[in-house]
Image 1 (spheres, rainbow, N blue to C red):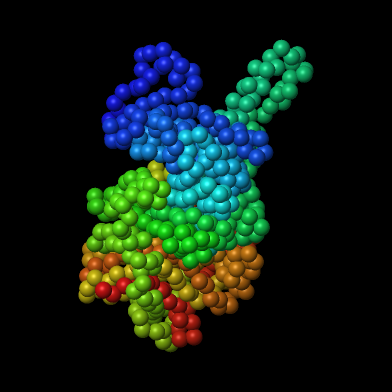
Image 2: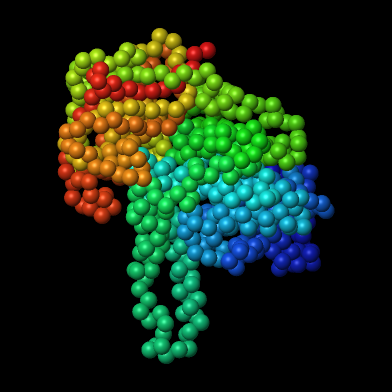
Length: 595
């Protein structure tokens, strides 16, 4: 922790002046500059709404690069970093986004972030102590505020540092494969709703104080209904809109980062995490910017760092697995070092690293690569095999690189009243009730509605690094159902560690824009994106695939009726069949690296 030297304003007349002005100068031992802090600095947006920020800056004449964070999580919690970065020669601006904490306006996810981000960047660049270079930073929704600002390409934005954030706010934030991300959506929205409720209570209180002399019959809030004010429609109208738009339609496309990579003209240092809920989007952002970014700098100077936990935790223990102290990384220090290179031209250690740095599970060590996926990664298909009884750990399901033959299909019954439970994985944001990360999956794998396919034990270390997908041939007795998939590393002691997972809602098998129900009994091809992994299956370990039709409560249950799950309470069982014969070669594809 930085050591505080001395309060410049302490115990003097200037202290009173500083306090009244909201300016608190502080000096730190680990940076060359004393620091001035200004609270509640106002920036007016194009529509007149005022957003407020805390500004941390060197207490020295001159102009400095700006690091900007736009957050819905309360700017007051970022003071420690602001002071450290300011002591190193940056102006740090932490702003409450529209409708949150001290900023004016109405809060609605994603809606205002491009315009407000653009206006804030240009406001920050024009401050008298700014040198005109503005970089952004932060994670999760704070990553979204960066990405949505970047696609608006404000002239003075010079870099972004998005940590564990999505690339598409339909697929990979609110839905995945057409299934509703129930656990994240409900827990995250519940957390956000507290400040919204506080603001509504404050506004109602202020209104009451302003009319206290009116007769009761003229009381504007005489019929104020506290229950209604606290309803979902009032506290989180966006959540209701998410449910109203299950398909990828214009509501979502207006905010899609994936359709605007050419508009991103600045380099990005992208931080992803293996067990993070936005892992897929983070990796797509890196690929999208480096392949389609709107400038040479965006395409050639961007970086990727993949850590372990992200929203699942900082580590070293993520779930039930301890990945070692070497897995820990100070993301703030990485960010400052990168901006030292980008904005100050410093020749530090980070300047000499390869553009991709991954924490490799298994040996639990860091590796640098020249690209993502690694240039020598080779897509390898593992075909599903069984004699028709792959149900549970006691079944006969196997995986191999040998193609399918004349084999018997596997069957299971999916009952929405008894779904396969979520056990760890990429969860957010209530670890007290559903813990994220790496856990033993054998309890789930003991269920008859989970098909289990496993390789023989590897006789040497086997590295899998890159995208993971499942091409599945299946049918159902229902007009709609889900198919889930999970990649697992099985140790010699049987511990079955989840690596990554995916889902597809059958009606969205061909398009997330145009749903189509199934014809019961007809065989369809499904493609399931399990995102990616970076894992070495150590000698003696096995690679396993789980297939089921539920992963609850991470995803909402498909009720198998074809009715909208947000509106329907009726459900039916589904008899689901997975085919893996010569005509229907179901296969898991992983990227294998042999060195």
